[in-house]
Image 1 (cartoon, rainbow, N blue to C red):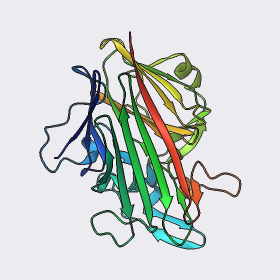
Image 2: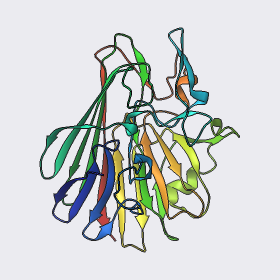
Image 3: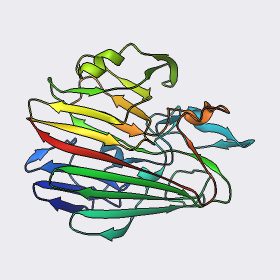
Length: 296
């Protein structure tokens, strides 16, 4: 696996452009700020095992890999791990091009067409860009997605940020409601049950989450008392949803700033796009996520 190194002061960021344009690791000095239990750097490690990867051109699941848009039925390949649904878009399977690079900033670009053979199928052409930048105190991730097709299509994006988890790790954020999942792993029932607890600060060993929250304010605080730091996350308004994933018994968890509800493309109405953006040919959507390091 070829890695690109960025640095600024004590911050170091390692990017894997050829492996989904994913983040391999992010460090403040010797301290890992993202998941760092990756089993080496040998060829063949998928982006999904790395510290974070892009969710483009949609976040999370599409039920049974099927959706209908503008009167046309589309079928996507189902996820190899999930098997029931399409999942996480297709950009994480691609080798991204390095468009610009300095010691502390890199722009990665991905042109996609439906006849491209090295990526899972998506029926619309697009061009995506990721901009990674480190400062002495922060990591910024910029995302853009432009419709290069002749047809409009529903679009979304996000980043699947994995963090180390210890017994005292907790987080705070505010959202309108959480979606409980049905047996099929798809959103079934909205609830505000955990809203107050998460606003006050919720210890992540208390419950196993794998849920999408809508009406996220775009700010979260992740605290790691045993490691001696916190991370403040601030995202652009386009990220109106977030996903919290805390698998039992694992030394990591995921917090994902995303634009859209899981399976949003099958739940849109005339008045609610569930966070998806309908991109006309030539139109572009953009957003930025900032993770700021705070010593405790």
